[in-house]
Image (cartoon, rainbow, N blue to C red; front, side, top):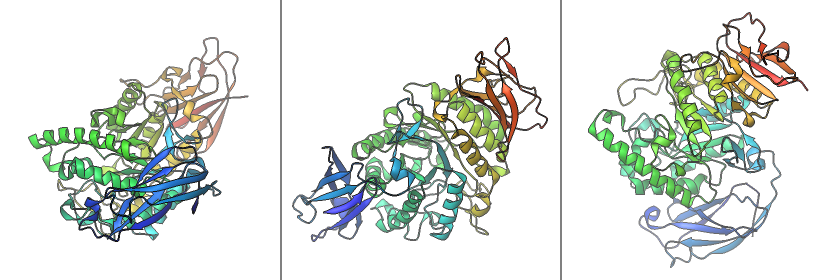
Length: 533
């Protein structure tokens, strides 16, 4: 009898006395669990090196779970047909991810929630290369984690070793045990994942959800679909028991950088779109936990696959052009939110703070508030210097096209003010039932339009709450369509430092309007009207 607690990862090994020449390719091992309620879960085991396989399981039910092994070589008595029991007790710790459970799409199809029904606010940071050895384990990795936890981040977007901005097997992308695959993609490298496990386990232990990108999109023509199925089976075996989110690829249909504007690029895009669709279907089949699945796009997630039923929520990428990215950002969010079937929408890559010596803190604030008040259920932040892990005096260096995105060290980048200010924004929203917010641009005048993306943005809950982002307070805005007889407490929230300024009581005049009092300081503000009683 084995013992564990609900939602906690437990693992054990199986060793084969029969030696295989290529155990990764020759053997597949599953462990089939029968839960107390009678559900069967087929959990992929992963090859751990030599002739050893390991299984990781996170039971969602309290009680006795029965299991048996199912090996592709049924004649191997060390791997096939082994049975046992696992006794699961209630979880007694304080880790919010284990106490509330993993993530799913809520019934309204607009936001995410834990399996216990608690709404989940997605505030992610971008650590594309965070599993490489340039972000040193344990000291540097834990330092960055501690900062993001303190600021209120809830998700880390991180790539499983097949990184962007480099060719395969570039030395800048390995960890202490090499690359995730052996040369020529002959087989997986378990030792790479042993080192990655330490980092992944630490993220979860600190309450951060890993959003795992299997690779960057252009790797698919290099490995092929069948190799990628093996890759994803391995990721599910290694990390599926954790409360992770799966992302099929980064920039799913983007071709290899040096193929752009060539016939090869067009061919690769078609291969990648079809390939990620097939891999997505396969991932749905083999993941016993049904973790959320998306794909990080060159623009919109649904455009990266042929069948958007392989996605649970839509990721967006809206540009790194500072203020010139505003129009595309708002258009992308509003278009994605309006599309059927309904999916939660998250801008998963927006202007990195400091990229190209631009996109400073005020742009980060604009991007957060304009996206959230336009219907996104979360936001991903990024700092130039972190995603590629620039070290002091040793920056990442040039991309395949020959130039670099910047040399700011990651330790400076994590202290850029935008990350803390987005944490303040999240804390303000969490004072309310933010998941019930609906975009209502008509509730303020002037309001944003395709002729003016700098005008106010508004969302709210009728009769309860209105939140208005003012990028510029000239002219003074007027709140419209206030309910007769209701009194609202009105205050300004400074999105730079979280300070609040009372504006008194807001009530409708004869036309249902309330003129916002003169705001002396010309800057961005968040105007909040909360029902007074």
